[in-house]
Image (cartoon, rainbow, N blue to C red):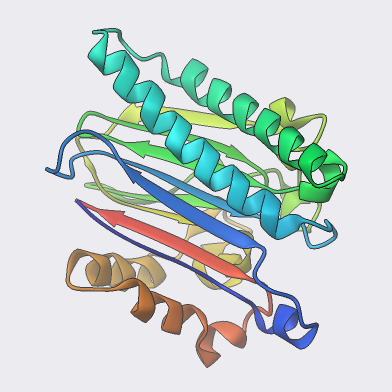
Length: 247
């Protein structure tokens, strides 16, 4: 499996002298064969004082904890109940964010962030999402958008993993991964380029060349250049994150 990811500061943030509030993190599962991976992306709220801290904390904690729990279950010979595991991961991540807020003398809301976590193994794809990020999957029968948020969230009214009602917004999907050949996680900065919001489906011509890029010798620096390009900047001034995994 090959994985390539990048997070880039949007032109709007650069104009305001603000850094990137997006983050991503990737953790391999198992041995060096590369047959399993945990992917996480997050988008810190633009109104949150410590948005970047929240996003970075969320992706690292969630991905590392998920990988550890999976390895622990496999080592003990226990079957994984994916909805429970992923819910526990997001709950624990929220707790970690609360502790970081205390350490910074801040409120939990100051670290507000969305969070999407995907586990891709040879036999299962399990995904948990809170907020307006997007997860796109390529299967043998085509490309699909997994569990999009409600229409109100497409209008910049989103829920965060730090929100009181995060469990009501939590979307978990689990499927057989035998037919899955690629997955893409992204923050909402790319939605206008990558998704048909009205129809709730991805633009396949956007993703196919990117998966081909990831399957070849594509590197993170090249993906960063694409996300910082005029083509992307013409459609969004927001921070952008894209993580691609292909078998």
